[in-house]
Figure 1: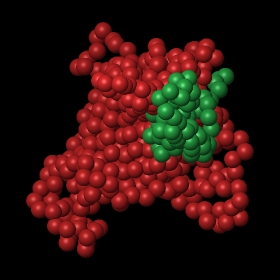
Figure 2: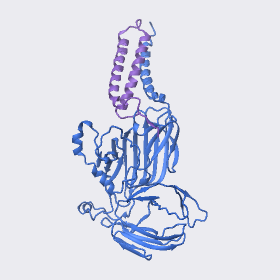
Figure 3: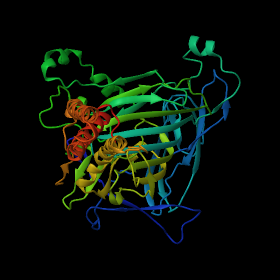
Figure 4: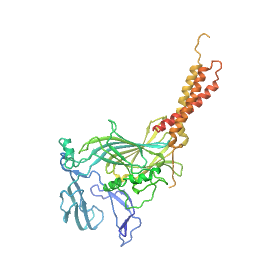
Length: 438
Length: 76
């Protein structure tokens, strides 16, 4: 529901639940949207529904050479599939480039540049459907993470260590023929127009010890842009050196800015009272721009590991009932990439009991045991698994557990007893008298 | 939400200093222990002194090696 007040839209999020209907035609799925207040007769309400489809663009031709552009099919309906009677509707398709090979002509349909307009259609019965096929050029990077395993290791001694294992593919039209490095480097605008060679990952503000490597070793083609410098003695220099508007405007161009027309009041992890900032954008952006060892063409794959550490106090909290919980962001830190299979493993310290995870959507939960440094019984691992993850899934989730602080002493106690054993052994050696004759 | 952040019981910035100090004390007491073993004869040895030195030295060395591990980035 949105209400317009002087050209400023305010959005009220509504509750959406998937449901089932008994007489659903052809495997139709249903979602139930609950209004904030009941709708009285004669009243109107404006709804904005956003849904994201993954793997819905079919590359056609399915194989392209290095110098060709990528064309894809998008299949949809000119009239929306709805169980309600629709009095009037218009459908707009917005394509990323002005090159559209063909589109189904469902009268009245016309095209203007990057926009195809279908309609307006009057008085359509429920469940009416007019299939439309748009064939257009799409050279945006089809970065698909086939599998991502994120391991978040909690250490009560002060840090959260995050290790991410990626298997990245180019999900667009497959590359056929040879790869000519000469063509690729000399005529970059024509050659490999649908390929990509760099990706952006957004990391939490107070991150340190970032590494980017794969099975071969460290990959040096990466840049970590911090965006702000929190040095009280350096305020004058900092103001001039800041170029923090650049990552902000760049992510805006990629439509990365979330909630830019909403007002959300909350605390930002990593930012405390007393921190000094000059621009609001500094609060939110630390990004890692990294390049795989080779540019990715259709069907090519790259595997790598990104790891970093964040301070514990930004993410671990104590609930009023005494339990501890980790508040972390779900999803993948890469911008504008979908993840086919995401696994998040939260490794709880030794001695943690009753683990449970709270998420705003359904995931598969599991428990495992991991043996790490100075472990006797092993650490409990909460495994959350979800398929088909998009950047909209980057919402906070919590993992609750109980922990008695006295268990933290188990690790130094182990070390102390090891040293004591060495001393006792040397004592025994000195005291033992193996003389046969006195 | 009434949630208090949880931090490490010892400030993280103090880990390197603490590790050097505790390891130094531990090594001094270890030295005392071994010197005592080497210089005393079988008759004059006092088991109480030896065990006390061993216990204190192992406590300091144990905590010192823990802080050394934490300071070098192996958050155990």
